[in-house]
Image 1 (cartoon, rainbow over the protein chains, first blue to last red):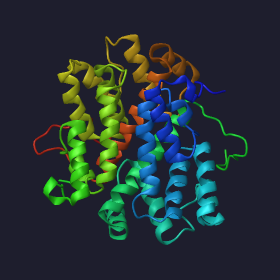
Image 2: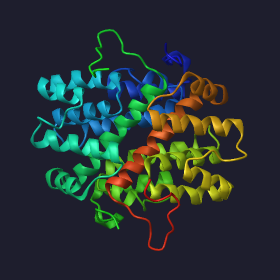
Image 3: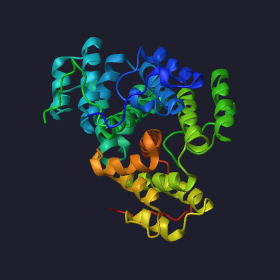
Length: 182
Length: 184
């Protein structure tokens, strides 16, 4: 059961509808945590803008970004986030093998190159709340300084989104499949 | 000390300067963590916008917000974030014994029901990654849906900040006393 109702556009003041429309424009619709986040429309727009940036701006390959997102979702066991982004990962060309390894929690075993590196970064950051010199150095060498900051932002954003989904018990919608083994 | 060079306005290109100026407009400055986030000016600006909303437009009271941020810093083990917000909390009138309790992860004495509800919500979300029905219900009673959304986003945002600080290995200023117990 949804804990808080989604907000519809006609419930908002005209100023707040501006934020609603911004979110729709950057994302294509109101899905996931945004229906509920629109209870605070301007803040929802801030979060959506950060989300648009970490997903679409910067230099990281989109497929690799989705690997980061599903790895983040797996760390916080967000079925919704994993399901939504596994679909995007497949569409971007991430292999089924990679997705399954991340879903099962065995990654980075069996992963290589960039995928292995970013999954290690996600896991260290979210499990230890720090990053070793070796991992930071490897990420910085590979993605540069800007890319490293943006990678951290990508993880942080999807951590925030996953937490909101969890707090409001947002359920999988029709067509979404739980992929993290319970 | 940090893992990246700190950037000032003169280090940035034109687009970066525009972001810098917007960040200063939003939060009064672009120092501290922002001098490091400016390696991605676009991202830094968006973080500043969220922070500005939380500080200036959120429905939640200042002292309550600072306590939630301290609880978040404690759960993520961020000495830097804890110290920065302990100072802000003190300025806002939060008592020293409250701050000490928050550093230890204990329940401070003398909090209002509303403050305790927010603190329990933050701890549960950060420790368990979920919120039980009673904790959610209590939060909803005090804060209504909008306030619970803001509370949830504040916790997420300041965890994100703490993770930036950790990844960039931002240390306390020389001579600063750590407020979180070391080696948990």
